[in-house]
Length: 65
Image (cartoon, rainbow, N blue to C red; front, top):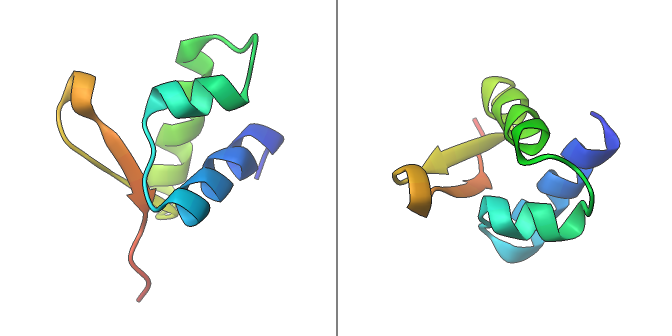
């Protein structure tokens, strides 16, 4: 995982859930599209899951097997 992806995973594990705004606050100066791409990679790998609609999207750790 990249450094930003590790930050996202840490947020999910420590807080239980987070929004893109929380992720952006922990990655100053990084474009929102880059953050969204990192989150999409984590979802595709089965590490995170996303729930909700566009402006209310919440990321949580994916349930284990």
